[in-house]
Amino acid sequence: MRDKTFCFYVFVFLLPCCLITACSSNDPVVLSGDNIICFGDSLTYGTGAAPNKSYPAQLSEMIGQPVINAGIPGNTTADGLKRLESDVLERSPRLVLITLGGNDMKNGIDKKIAFKNLKKIVEAIQAKRALVVLGGVKLLFWDRGYEEEYEKLAEETGIILIPNVLKGLIGHNDLMSDAIHPNAAGYEIMAKRFHKAIAPYL
Image (tube, rainbow, N blue to C red; front, side):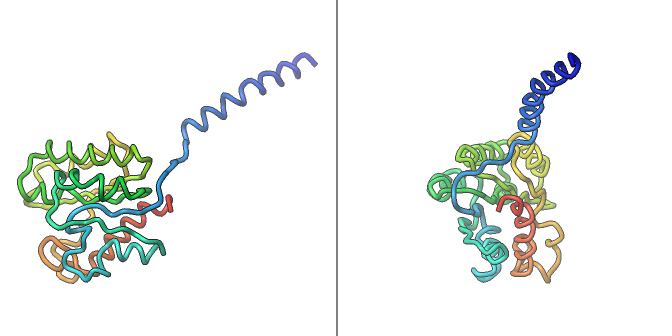
């Protein structure tokens, strides 16, 4: 009888501890906000395709929900940081999909400056309790270590990283409108990659 009583108290004592450990190691992602916002440069805007064939437009069709396209061609990370408040933070973000860094890379901006800006953008969005998905860009002749910086940023901030949103597109004329920008078919592939990343959070 004593043994049974002892085992009962051990069970009662240890059970909450086990539950606390389990919860702390598998905390659910708690998101705030209402909107899915695609924030970035020409790859978000949809340069090279009709407006209804940009990746945000095609993503919206795939998930059956509105998606805000907040892409501006030519934007660098510094440009994105300047308009972050009005174009993202004030629009009740829930999921924010980013393509930024390609123009910094192409324009020869030091990677330390570019990723300092990107980190500020990411952390400001996370402070709103929104999920960030970052689409990395790999441009063969301009990279200069940007690829590693995307990975480092993801490790530091816990964001979801698509290492290279243009993987398998560049060099394929059936998927590209020019050397850097996809066409409608290419943007569909990008949309599918972002869809896969956000599917668990829809």
